[in-house]
Amino acid sequence: TLVLGLESSCDDSAVALVTGDRQILAQAVVGQNSAHQPFGGVVPEIAARAHVAVLPGLIRQVLDEARVRIAAVDAVAATAGPGLIGGVMVALLAGKGLALSAGKPLVAVNHLEGHALSPRLADPGLEFPYLLLLASGGHCQLLEVRGVDDYRRLATTIDDAAGEAFDKAAKLLGLPYPGGPAIEALAREGDPAAVPLPRPLLGSREPHFSFAGLKSAVQRAVASGAHRPADIASSFQQAVIDCLVDRTARALAASDAPTLVVAGGVAANQAIRGALAGLAEREGRAFSVPPGWLCTDNAAMIAWAGAERLAAGRTDPLDTPPRARWPLDPVAETVRGAGV
Ligand code: ATP
Ligand code: FE
Image (cartoon, rainbow, N blue to C red):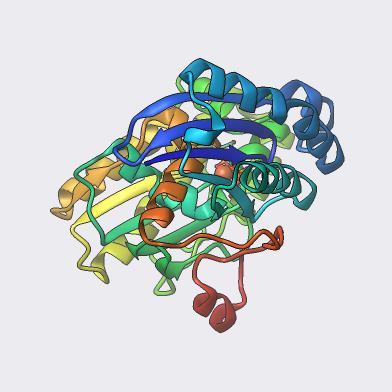
């Protein structure tokens, strides 16, 4: 099978052609970092307009590069949420137009399912179930991934997402957006023990994440003028690592999933990958993490999730709505109400 994937839910316009046997025939990602740079974060209106301008050309480019005609694809997969609604509408409507004109099925993909299944695109040996730490710009969750469309959420953040914490800390340090890569680079030159910072909920019996208090402590550390920026960056990153490892260890203890998996933009961080690999080893679990480019937003993960859904017989009608919010585990959402 061959699936065309489209993604525009945040600030990356992306298109990819992926086969059911894990070949990426072509793909393209165009970010908008410079457009949002002056504002220190993504401006929804600017993002949506940029997707409208860029996405059609990327579709042409990817099809041409792979020498594939739209008639040869088996389905068109487009992110239908969650995300910035104006952006989500662009890829979803483009996907509907292509599906309609070419007479192909539409697969409306949850962006989080794209992240959640992306490790299976990179790792053919990764079977369900697995315990997933999904750490991205808008989410920080622990999920038991039991199969396509079968997710049990064990934990979420009660305030900020992990990537959001990186972005806010970077802004406080005067580093460019997105903050994750900038902090990771600066942290290499710093001492992770130099600045005392809190580890919210560390050792707590409740399963969730919290990063807002850490951000406030970074704010105070910057304002004090007493520390080198590299030491603040390194100590901040270490605090995030300690929280992620502690919360994930707690979830692992409650799960008999044989494999620990990390995905989402924050999983591109080498120190975080290393710390979680160490945890998996200590706990006697296998470990899987996609390559960095597959952790941050891309369309290969959307095409792949589309291929997995198509194989499970799940296609969607042309009146499928775009969704700003769309939890992977609706049951957890109604029970807890906390976080996203
Ligand atoms: P979501 O997937 O929750 O809707 P998103 O799509 O905006 O949000 P992703 O693209 O999946 O988020 O991830 C982007 C986030 O990952 C940003 O917050 C960014 O700072 C963070 N990030 C990217 N690279 C790194 C890194 N090397 N270290 C830490 N964080 C990183
Ligand atoms: Fe994402």
